Length: 386
Image (cartoon, rainbow, N blue to C red):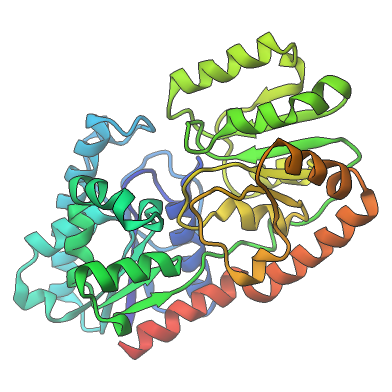
């Protein structure tokens, strides 16, 4: 068996920016390599790719599409299309020449859609296609998402209907696929994301820093986190809120800047830009006291696991459209409003003993259930059965 992990074309692997799907592909491949599994990553060409010993076959695209793009506008969509077409050509060649049982693992709707459309049926019959759904939109209630799904994710619908095996990050998505598209429940497997517990580790720090990691936009809801923290920042000038991630919405970032200026907390709210995932990013988790997660919609958050592996209590918006695994439900600190948020800060975060006990529990759960060795071997188990 040979596994082909397909990079999305958003950014190269290893990612040098916040790109959750690319991190998943990288971490799965690291485990495959460590366990001597026959694998390859098919990924977008990048002359500035970070050093890695992972096995990568580069897919060429015009230079104008190789530069970093987080705008998600028309150029981004064109980049996805061009990369996916060239990817399909490369996969076609691979199928023709390979003598192994091939499992092609897709992570993006564009990539698999064009593969399904461009590669002849005769060749596709030789291959097992697996598709992991990373899209958080599916996590919502059907009546509230159905129009958006049909308008923006018709390619993904086509992918799930034609995949041999579908992996989802939550049960809500699985339920939609079964009820709305009559997908056989046996084809759908719920597997969580993981975290690299060798990189993200606890490191006790005396500074009171509240940390958030994620793209700067309304969905990640950084402004709400700052507003909730404002009374504490104003009363305690040694407290800080630090956030990192690419700016998706410049107007939203300006709203944040305007607010912190009005509230006179500019020196305590620090935006550090895009931080390379892994060792560099782990330093900021390690230098913090708590992780704020006010996001509105997510499929499954890598940053929650990164925070827990780093020993940071996770303060999460209870209104978020995000299915949390039962194993994590009891240790995440959910807030409903300003009052419950304030209570968490006082009773859980600023009490060192309580915070350390919570930190130890988080780390244990992550090590036992969410490290990438466990998650990758779950994927392998199903690949081998196909």
